[in-house]
Image 1 (cartoon, each protein chain N blue to C red):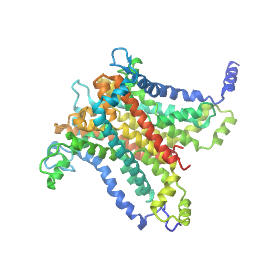
Image 2: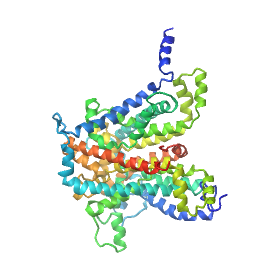
Image 3: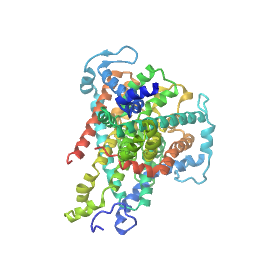
Image 4: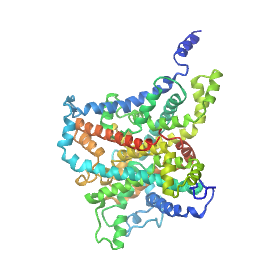
Length: 290
Length: 304
């Protein structure tokens, strides 16, 4: 054991860790405070939302806000369930196709030999720096040229290709020994067979990570709804939420509903991350750019 | 028989068929990333209102941006520089320090604390606007106003999100709050994977304190993760720059106090339909992100 050296990943508590806790715990509490606030706000009855001075925790928790949220329909008579349905369809489709094409591309980039390989990977690495909000206008022009305005495709197609997904899976796959794949090849297995039976099971942690990332991008996305879809019945829950929050300043009853909606937006992210967090850490270990 | 000959033909090219695997990704990548970027570059050289054919005007949009756009020069550019200098490197350094500290506590508390610190970054964009609008609400029911008034620090409520002098600091705090994302996780994994014998060797070689240890051992050993984290920090800074508009509820933001490059693009492109000009701003933003990322790359790549 090193005398003065930093001990990474210690197995048990010792006194020298105390300073870290003193800094980390208050900071973590500060980080989580707004999220706890959303929880408590969404369970507050109307009179507590109005209360002065405002209270942090609800005194008489109630599901009223959630009931209101689900019984309200928009001005156009569209029920909330419709927005949620749209969000689920779009999210599932984007996640599925994103994982499918990212794993396929990463497999080729990591385990096959061909001329353009390095150039393609380099372009993909540069694309990590791509800031999608800068090209909303050309994307809009493109989507109207493709005649997919006001369809589910306008939500789905722009979000499927995610450079960081291909990047992470490829880096992860690089550390899987080639011998496994070579052995299968000798046995006469096709690339598609190897992809399905050998590669996919081996890269599960990376797939889980990309699933989370892709979920976060789609589920929280309001851009596709506000720019590419005018048909209210095809817009997503995130978009509906943004309309709720944009005029809550002078509407306290709306605050409770908006908090309930925020909670519904946030919880799936949290649950997915908690369930899959060890996979994520495993994947991020290979995330370096060389 | 037929199948056999087909197989032979493809086998001669490349038995693995890499392009069959790459095609779907490359296709969508080209359509939704490459083509929009190229289109933005082309449109930036034109005068285009979205209806009539674009008219080629050379570099005039760029010249106007630098010489004629008072809002850009007096508000957008200084705001962007201030915002990205604090949120970018600030968030990055904070991510690293938190990751470094977390790596030195046992697994269970580490996992819990890392989750708490990471969770704000799941709430990208709109999701958390409601929290901030309630906390910073301009009347006395706003939480911050209430606390400050009870403490006797202020006597009348402050319009936090509508005041030019408070909007930018609030934007910076909110952005820092949600910046412990993928880069943070990458760096945490990076610190955890450093070979412990390196530290022992370093102390034998005469390293004396934690600061020297970070500079000479930790950072050099996890350089690839540091670069990845830097790229993520730069991209997030620019990607989440719509925060000012979300918080204040208007574009342009009050007195342009929270106006950043991304809002400027939207202001011209989507509100004023000056798409050629907006595209020039887009190109400038993308170049800026690229240069800054490359700079970070060079800083951490140098000692190789």
